[in-house]
Length: 216
Image 1 (cartoon, rainbow, N blue to C red):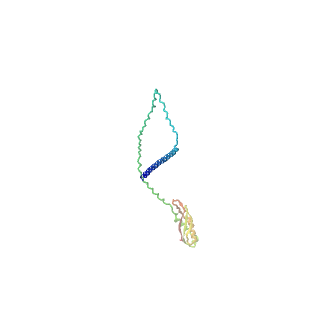
Image 2 (cartoon, rainbow, N blue to C red; image 1 turned 120 degrees about the horizontal axis):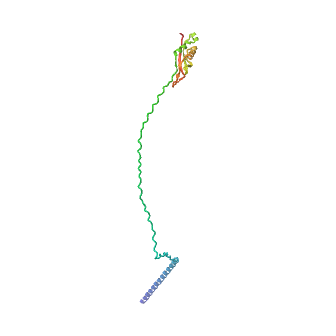
Image 3 (cartoon, one colour; image 1 turned 180 degrees about the horizontal axis):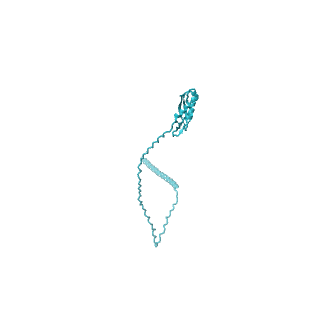
């Protein structure tokens, strides 16, 4: 019984060792295969190209030792720039003061000329007593025979020459003979100072009066 157990234990250990070795082989194979495939893929993607080396620029040959180097060109310094500005010139303008206002008093307006006195007037009888008597002396004969008396009112127009140019009876006496004799006598005998206009020049006017016929 003990021998059989020992035999079984040795076989189990051997089997475990074999299984472990197989796992190691399989893992190695897997790892190796995957790494190969990855290497192939990377290899396919890498593009190969040639790198050409650039030649360095050729340096100029040094001058021969027996010839001296030319002196550097003489560069004149730029002229100095002066920033001095001239002083500003100030001009003083003297402004005279404004003239003082002159107040003038307007002269009063001259008074209007006095109105010119009008020289106008109406006609005036001249020597009325004498020519009135002459008119009454020329009593109408028909009225005298009939012993007719009366008073005649007349209105006459007097021309610029002072003589009667027209006559009308303003109030009758009741007798046509007396009325006609009154206007006829005024026209023949009456004399006037003619009427005057505003400037004093003779003009036409009018005059009214009454002639009384009475038998003495």
